[in-house]
Image 1: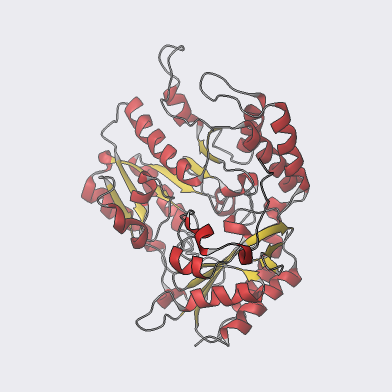
Image 2 (image 1 turned 135 degrees about the horizontal axis):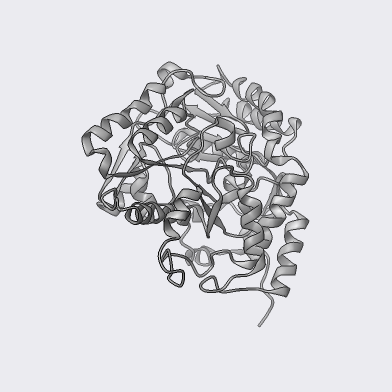
Amino acid sequence: MSKPAVSQPASQLSRADLEALWIPFTPNRAFKAKPRLLTKAEGMHYWSDDGRKVLDACAGLWCVNAGHGRREIAEAVHRQLQHCDFAPAFQMAHPAAFELANRLTKLTPGLDHVFFTNSGSESVDTAMKIVLAYHRARGEGHRTRFISREKAYHGVGIGGTALGGIGNNRKAFGALLAGVDHLPHTLDIEHNAFSRGLPKHGVHLADALERLVTLHDASTIAAVIVEPISGSAGVILPPVGYLQRLREICDKHGILLIFDEVITGFGRLGAPFALQEFGVTPDIITAAKGLTNGTIPMGAVFVRTGIYDAFMQGPENLIELFHGYTYSAHPVACAAALASLYIYNHEGLLTRAKELAPHWENAAHALKGTKHVIDVRNYGLIAGIELAPVPGRAMTRAFELFVKCFERGMLTRVTGDILALSPPLIVEKAQIEEIFSMIADVLKTID
């Protein structure tokens, strides 16, 4: 058998070569007619199959926080593969899992225990099961309802899909789970367009939770789950005081609060997690993406001690939580995560976004008044550029911007009529200028 190829230029791939792969969240027929392939990555850049250098303005998929091709991670993974390539997670463990758990929980004050998964989607479904089992362990098994938000994205598991509030992500899959309701989203362009940082208007939207409590009764509600900043829906920010108000209402009614920090975790906002940045401590955090700098699939669920302790009852020889994955705390994933944490700490990346945020914000808001731009939203090193939709053809203008930016040498992220940006945290000011300058230039060419 010949050695596997690292990559193959698109020019050498026939349409038949492309057919076996079912690509996620992608119009497969259109893509395969004109594929966009990436074959190499280093630092702030990808290289396309035709040799073009492509500036990464979205950290791969919100995950490559320390930049591409980090030698420290590659070497750690290589060493781990040679030393211990796999260890069973049930009834056994390996030292790196404990080391990683201890290092991670230092970044999540108030949440002292972590359960490892393989993705953000698995983290959300795991959090849901922990919540339900927690209430049952406390004699409140009647608390089974989850409250999410419109426009929410919580992964693609059956639980996360039910929690999600983006119509296209739900409509093909039937009734999903019973017992899920949704708060209104916080996007309000009429009152908050071109806000710099958190919008001032909209804290009252959190009070919709009180209405749902009245409708369903607090005794039936297990948890509220929100993204501190909604990324996949197009960078939707919480109004000033909104997350604090949710925390207050949850405390009042004995409802757990979950932060989905799959995107906001590991420095994206200028702090290790949104819990530090916004001064609100949830009961549970779901995480993934930046945990391993995007190199090895891994996720995590952080819980406060009181939740963990509720399970640690009864005979000590009995399993406390009948849940887990074959690859929970996989040794190679742990090695990648530990190396990523070393880089984040050694290079100050967990807080670097705060230093760059003013420059990022000014560059983003310089697009105000540019053709088609109806809103700019930003926080830390995240930005959403919302475009006026083409009448009768929603979601086409931003996609054209995405494609043309790629053709000119920059990778962005498109969601609906919004261009979402989240570069690696190693981005330099000159590259920030390059990102927004290119967007402005390309917008001039779009009808």
